[in-house]
Image (cartoon, rainbow, N blue to C red; front, side, top):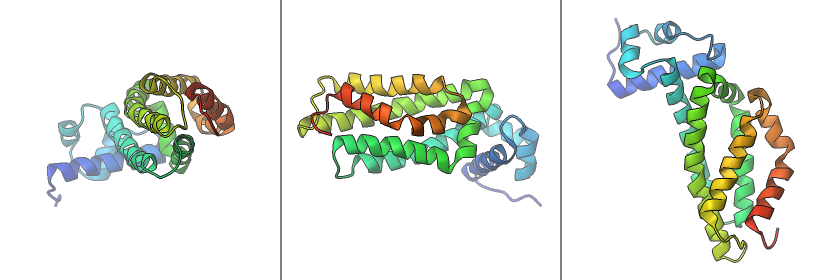
Amino acid sequence: MRTTKKPEERKEEIVQTAKRLFVERGYKRTQIKDIVGAVGVAQGLFYYYFKSKEDVMEAVAVEYGTKIFCRIRELVNQDISAIQKLMVIYDFFIDAAQQQKALFLEIQNAGGGEVHEKIILDVGGKLIPYISQIIKEGKKNGELSCEAPDLVSHFCVSGMIQVLNAVPADRKIQFMTDNRKIFIGLFVRILEIKEC
């Protein structure tokens, strides 16, 4: 006999099962019938919550991003300098991707890149205000002399996204690690940091 669950619990169960299958089998090799089979529900119930496999991958990615931004909120509120916050956030993105590398790669490759593109725009849009806040704090405490924090934060985040979009998914983590010093150096120059 099938267990009756609240709609939000059932939807979450589908998302968690899809995430597990995407990591184990890969996004492209996982079919909707695999997800509903593992959950033990009818395919129609899947379509009650999600329009497509891409839609459930977006839900998986949103959950991944939500956890990342909870941590970024904590990092932004640390009692450290603005440049230290920027470096900690940069390193955190690398660490988060390494810790869930299989999921990171599946999100990158999902839906021929369309899902990834939506996610990147969402992540970038959420990250810009945090970077702007850090720059404004740095300017207020005299650490930075940046005249246009909102514009510069948008430029830095968008530029980073564009550079990373040109790197194959399976090389992004290593690319970010290998080029950390270069990216930090660019931030230093763009932000007109008074002292490093």
